[in-house]
Image 1 (cartoon, chains in turn red, orange):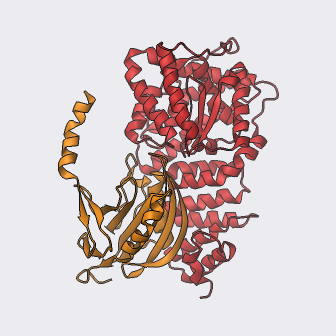
Image 2 (cartoon, rainbow over the protein chains, first blue to last red):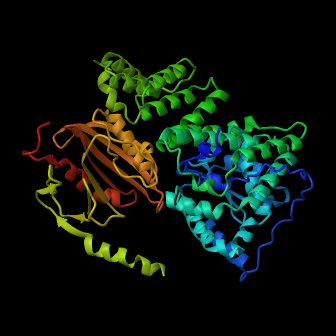
Image 3 (spheres, helix red, strand yellow):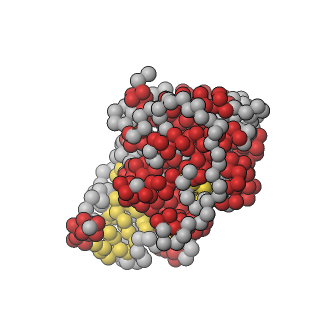
Length: 399
Length: 194
């Protein structure tokens, strides 16, 4: 496949994450794995230095973030994620503070002062702990190698970086999603440059391997993200005009090859992916995050995500239900039939969400099957008499 | 440098945007509807408002009523910056009540984290429609606002009015007047029949 076509036109699918987890490109075999040594803990820089100014700035942003209504305050989840970050970060553990931010976009970022933001759109997209470790390991790579400082000292990028800090951290503190123009600024500032990205990739995978995570999950995360981007671009019909995020990083497939090759070299004996802890900790939030995801109306991305999740957990009725909802809301040619199929798949499984009957009723009504619709709505109201919209369907109970 | 660059924009805004007092008594809403508020409200006048009107009592961050008058087939409720055409929920004349709420939800989600608290059949502007209630945490200022809205479809076009105000103090302060105001909205007799 033509790479440029593959990447074309994905400017607005919530890709801050790509910037954060972006893009080292050339498939240079990096044979020096294993020789990298973790730098010592970072000391707080002197006030009055440029680095001190940077820290003071992000400290203020962190104070705002700490109070944000968009931060999920769940000790168990936070402890779990902090444990994962600490496992990767080793001696740097005491310097890292994890914030889970409710924003349905793939993104994580680590500020130079140790503030680690994980957005819920990223949590939703990770299949296991090792996948998140791939993203966080990469961010820790930028952190321990102090890439932001290099970036700050690069006069040409200083202005862009300042804007980035204002936008990225400010927006995150405010819950998030930036406009396309802001995304462009963020991308240009946050894209550290190929050398930094390559180094962060390498450190991240190294940390994964040292911590016993399967480093093969790193190229998988990247591949999943690319598949979502492609699905969204295909759906919105944007095959021309390349994403700002890829503009300076034109070789994601080669990056995948590098990550894959390095994973094979690094994979430790008994490497784990950590599904169980992941499900236990993030599972309780999945429904809420899927609802947030649906509201984004990025059906290409959402459907690619759901199909991937269903492939991994085909007996999970909630995933089939949400797939039905995504098709119903999209409503393109053939989508109603696909939605009905997905609702039927959900219904055939134990503990299927009652809302599937509402979705089915809506499609049957739209396609002229009044009797079928009435029956489905009645089923919905009988099963969810307390639903926020039950009153809309009450009349079907006693036709 | 930057403030200088913004100066023309500010001047334009100063020149063209103003608030006018409307009510009490009959007030036209666009050219198809009228409201009869019992109190005085402030209405924003600005270029490019299209089929939307914004009213407030204490000022916009504090309380807002948005009127959407005659959203046509294929049009979104609000423009979403940065979104591609297919990424925006759009009105269809055959939309079911629940879909209208979902369209509102998608638009509101662009502004923050939204939760629909209740939806029920209700008359609006003298014809069948829906009433819905919601809670929104705005991502701009992180203020939690509560609101309610009414919607109805007439001649294949959507008419909706939404009140919202911060959950603390302002919602309670204005909810009753807003409810009465939205209840007073009617289609003009001379308008097209429904």
